[in-house]
Length: 120
Image 1 (cartoon, rainbow, N blue to C red):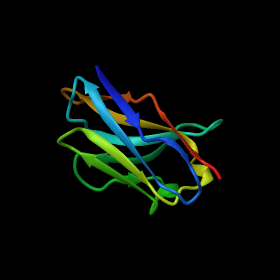
Image 2 (tube, one colour):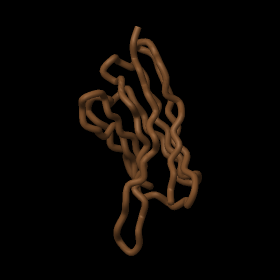
Image 3 (cartoon, rainbow, N blue to C red):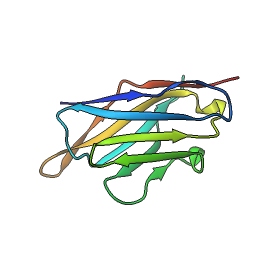
Image 4 (cartoon, rainbow, N blue to C red):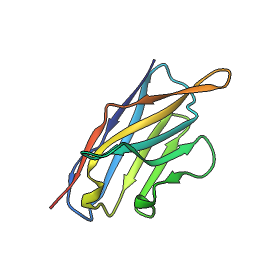
């Protein structure tokens, strides 16, 4: 069973920066994809950024140019660097990993979530 542990959330002023970290524990795999989702009050969970083992990352339009996802394949860790934060970025941020289930399936592993609040 894979557990994902997030850290780095908090309260920040508009225009500020935060860095989220996600570290796996338990059964460690080479995840197919790792990424970050967020859920604001009263809204559905949405993709923020994701990256496969290779290739370019995916970003939501709302965060392009402000957020950067960094994946360390050797350590199965993923980070989200968030700059120029806006009040609308306020949400609970969840780490996600697509865990392979051979021969060709996969399932989602989630972290417990970390709160990011952007407010003056």
